[in-house]
Length: 129
Picture (cartoon, helix red, strand yellow):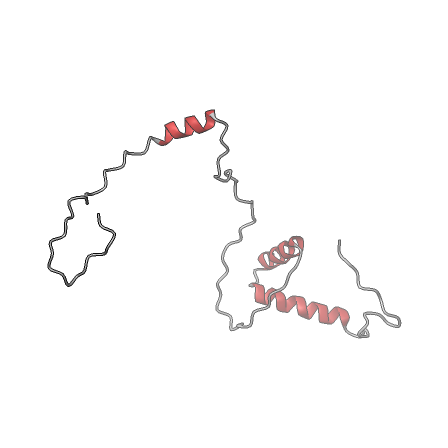
């Protein structure tokens, strides 16, 4: 082959006899054979080990049309959330209704107390372990 590029404007016939399609690649060996050879050579697989998904307490979906359309996202311990769901389920309340009852109960419990949660001196905030 020459080192010069062929011009598209020249009318010379190009010699393309040196061009041919690539030869077909041999088929890959079966996966079982590859696995046997790699295990024999103590090759560590890059595949992650199969891990069972973490067990979660799946709750049934709750879809109700109640007119409550503002969302409140909070972080809480799983025990507190489970207790909240248990109370709502036991009483037959939707979660918004259970929250409203909880707020009402908290307001009743705090009625007549100062903003520092005590009748005279401030009480330190309890930390629930």
